Length: 65
Length: 347
Ligand code: FES
Image (cartoon, each protein chain N blue to C red):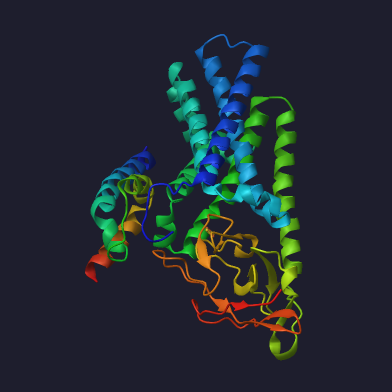
């Protein structure tokens, strides 16, 4: 049960983080001016949700620079 | 290519590939369910669900086996290269087929109000120590999670974001998924007391995939011993007309690096054999619309200088070429990426 709860929490935080990332963060981690279509952002959402700790780390790093 | 990211970079060839893929999956599942229902008509909804579980499960396993066979097959015989072209879509579709299989299992328990039974089966820690009786559905879930991760990170963005080496390493997990799936099917078949055909086909598929990799690997190692190096370290490629027009001859530098020597009419140039996208074998591609075109996903480069045509930005290393006594020779020491190096020869 604990495992399921931890997984659910990971998924939930991932879903939210990924949502913000594909809207705002993605242009931060790419070279300035790289266009990303809306369709691509939608397709990138599941991957960002799964890898959210790393995605967040890169986003934060890119923001600091 | 990397001038921006779109949802799916379809072109005519990819659309045809995808249509064939979807048609093949539909046909297989339709035929499997049709024939099985005809032989033993399902009596109720759980029976139908069972049929769906088998149809989608076996389809996903076959698809995985094909995906893992495409790479070595294409290395052994270039006629398989078109299969490699859009392998990522193949992988994503495999995930969806496997997901329907997984969902159907869940549904089978749900329609019979037996979900607590499923939960008990998965959380029965004592059973994990046994061989027969191992909760093989857990293995199925694990494989599905890996397939989800691979499908979700298959977009070119992830390749750029994670860097090609990390992305490649991540996608090597497909082998792990395949191993888990083999165990999942083997244990499931043993516990389900089904026909002996399942273990035989399973073993056959496993031996086939492993054997293909061994044969292709051995062939590659033989090719990697290096082409003969002549005077001044230059490698003889052959008379220009022996390099197929709009295609390449691949030579191997002493260090093992492969060089693709292309001919486009009277123009000859040498590029690294590794595509900047995912290290695809450029030398197995062709010159299309005046550009060297990677056989894997169609990235293009100018023969003159190894640069992708604008607005794309990929650049490849080029190699000096010369014509000596009617023989094209290539210097295996690479030039900085993007350096013009192609020459015109008289045929
Ligand atoms: S285009 Fe993908 S590896 Fe060359």
